[in-house]
Length: 178
Image 1 (cartoon, rainbow, N blue to C red):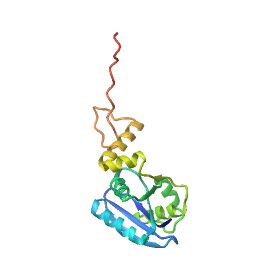
Image 2 (cartoon, rainbow, N blue to C red; image 1 turned 45 degrees about the vertical axis):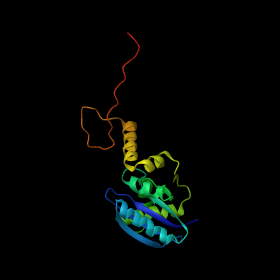
Image 3 (cartoon, rainbow, N blue to C red; image 1 turned 135 degrees about the vertical axis):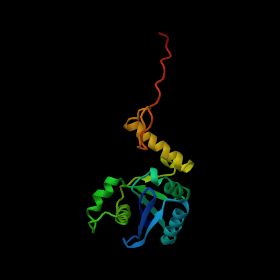
């Protein structure tokens, strides 16, 4: 049974975590750097809040900048889920406060994970989870390359600043004789 829901608004260099309890009362709100020592400290602090209960970690992405955090959570055997950015954006309209902030988004993510039962979980056997356990950098590379393959590839002769652009694969020669 979950006693704490840790909602994390993922950023490139920093994340913001808000952790409410079962009544929805905010027990923690903190900005953390996207580096291992700070993330490990956050994990320890949130687990201490749970006081022998379980934590459900919820985030607004499951790749890219979240790779290190997801890898550390998997290594710790933690339960995780994610909400799409669109879901967070739409849910935000129902919460007080007009401005969009990382703290508000983290609160919305945590609260939605606390209230909703229809969110998919990232489990240790999932392909993304296995890739992240092996190497967060390799998983990020493979997931962004997959996006590039699904959206089209960058021309080998042009340079793209978009990290999801993957070079077009070389065409295989036809082995049959002419």
